[in-house]
Amino acid sequence: MSGESPSTPGTVATPEEYPALATDSPTTLTEALKMIHPIPADSWKIFIEQIGLLYQEYRDKSTLQEIETRRLQDAEVQVDTDESPGSEETPPEEEPASSPEKKPLPQICLLNNANSRFNLWQDLPEIRSSGVLDILQPDEIRLQEAMFELVTSEASYYKSLSLLVSHFMDNERLKKILHPSESHILFSNVLDVMAVSERFLLELEHRMEENIVISDVCDIVYQHAANHFSVYITYVSNQTYQERAYKQLLQEKAAFREVISQLELDPKCKGLPFSSFLILPFQRITRLKLLVQNILKRVEESSERECTALDAHKELEMVVKACNEGVRKMSRTEQMISIQKKMEFKIKSVPIISHSRWLLKQGELQQMSGPKTSRTLRTKKLFREIYLFLFNDLLVICRQIPGDKYQVFDSAPRGLLRVEELEDQGQTLANVFILRLLENADDREATYMLKASSQSEMKRWMTSLAPNRRTKFVSFTSRLLADCPQVQCVHPYVAQQPDELSLELADILNILEKTEDGWIFGERLHDQERGWFPSSMVEEIMNPKIRSQNLKECFRVHKMDDTQRSQNKDRRKLGSRNRQ
Image (cartoon, rainbow, N blue to C red; front, top):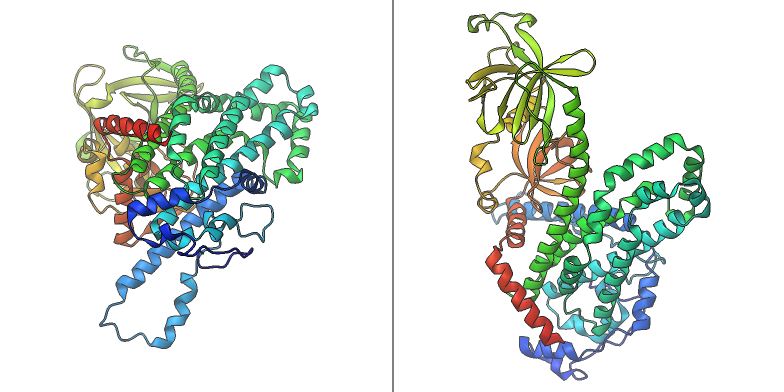
């Protein structure tokens, strides 16, 4: 892309005009970059105003482009690996046939004018005319593009937030329909979120105006994440109530449904539903963490910019985790109350509701009954339905009874559970496993032979009941050292059960377990979240070099311990003082 000519010709600076740029000395280069003129504020503001993509559009296009880029890299590296000096069968005439696969991907057009090419940092007229592209190394140009994307995507996000407020929240017809309490639940503290985004974007814009070569953006990200991004936690924690209120309003208020439909048809919304605007803050805070990761992969190791990127990433990670916990806490509390009401205890009652307890998995299995000698009998009467509620610290075994109730007849702490897969003994005993309670409700050992409906269901229960201890207590860093099978998400997936993992486009995951009937137990690299998902949602990364590169980048992001973080904060503060 950098090889194309700008649509607006500019005068390229020569070494004679900028003598300091003619040398390869890193020190002189750093000094020379400081001499390059800043981007005029008017020029930059015009660019920001011309951004036409709503954030939802940008995000989808960006992740799809990321997927295609990985596919091309995987294919190209695979071709290079397959081709060797001894492979003489391929005739020279066939080489042009593969050339289309190596064409660069079309860049994302952020601006209103689809023909405008100023979508990359290197396409800005000031960059083209300065001559800086002739002296910067390719790695530095890629770093500049990564920082530039963080800034421009924030502008796109702010544009979408403004539309949510001006077009929906401030609509007079909608205000008359909604009770103030309904409006509060629906829009929460979105005004606070927009104010934080505006302040954040303003600082990023000022940094861009300082110099055409961006010095850093992660120091700004760190300051805002540490001091202002708590508004995201408030907004996202309200998500459960927000979704429920929205569904209820659609069902019960025809006037609300009519107005929302009309507002969605406005060309400003570009065919996007109202719900896509409501989830913007959660999408942005998670995406922002990935954008900082992208910068972190490109900064020089052991540099000040690496320190600020690591600090910014850590702060964002804490905000994202707090957001996730906020959502989970709201939904878990309600879920635990509902489960408690449905249980009747045949044994000594066990208190279900606890602030530190949540549901991991629930469902029906078949328990084998009768003496062990009758295992070979081919009759369904061998099995009787039971229902399991597995919490993070407790297993409750029940039988379903009329009235949507469950009669509890056994329980055990989760730490005292052991599972064992039964060897294949024919169709009747297919997908059967043994569950041992080392100490049950009667303070004795108990054994259950359980049959699942499929291989994947059996594997999922076994993984949830007693996680594989070979991986449970192995550090994430140690797991990164192995060449684990990897996949990337090509279709988004929303978890349907507590033991499943929701996937976003372009997520990269290590495969920890795989079933023959199409399910994968995986660990996402960027946040170490684990869970099951359908194999149809992902595609495998075949080339070991690409897998190794993904692991190396992941290790770099997560390599710091608390001592290093403390040292890096001191260095970041010193660097900030020096810039001032």
